Image 1 (cartoon, helix red, strand yellow):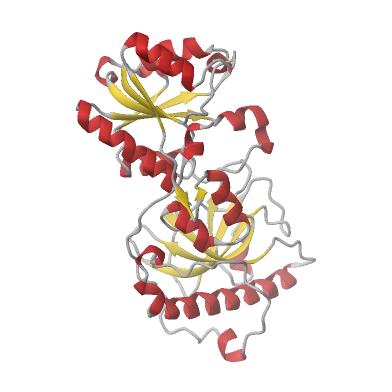
Image 2 (cartoon, rainbow, N blue to C red; image 1 turned 120 degrees about the horizontal axis):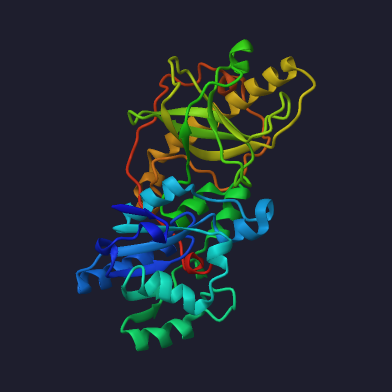
Length: 370
């Protein structure tokens, strides 16, 4: 797969393709349906499938911190696009130069002069250009003049509702990870490389793996029961904090993960974290002793939930292929129900690894809607 950063890096070998344009945030099942639609035409033309994305995303450029949180970083987005058939990804810097192009200039410079597009798939409500004249009708008109076809995306629905990135964000923010996975076609995850930080967790007996997050609005914020996957594919039950660590103070968002019953050095390793259930929001504690006591309660609740849910998955839930993401995904935030002392005990679990399994994918039409 080729990743092309900016129009100036386009070469003759990149020209002649089937293309689609959009944010593709999350690469959900609707996006995957668009990619399948494009693959069919790419096979007919015997040309590569090219996905055009923007960095930053347009709403991030205009709204800054008020823009919707991202579901996927660019690195992860490119990987997912590749997995679902994209052969080229053109990353266009969304800046003053790009936003100043008229609709016709965008078509001429990007689609015709840059990519030499043979067939274009976009949403029929796709808008572009500083003059706001860029729309499906203009694309179709220019396509007839210049000899390329323009086709609108097929609507993809789950439970009779169109799949969208905003719908996924709402489900994640509400703690409904099971429903979000149905729209994504896979369990939602966070990725990063473990770095050295203040190492405060070690001083209170709770060592954590720290993964820096991008300085952007957070999709999740709070404390979660999670499953952590290491580079070697092993998965561990864990508890994680996503946010700014108000008790110790932090200007940059961080993902802190404590692997239950794990001993070892994780510095420098890439880690994938699957949030499974929301335990609580972030709280500023008066002192480290109060923080430590709450962390111990969080660990017990995470352990209890993950192991009980995994045990249930081994029976009836595993029989439903659509729901089998091999992860214990909650459908709502965990309540504050009482737990027995045996369930709270750190000895409630004899094994600290979770079996890994493959997963699929999900999302729709707002991919081509900025």
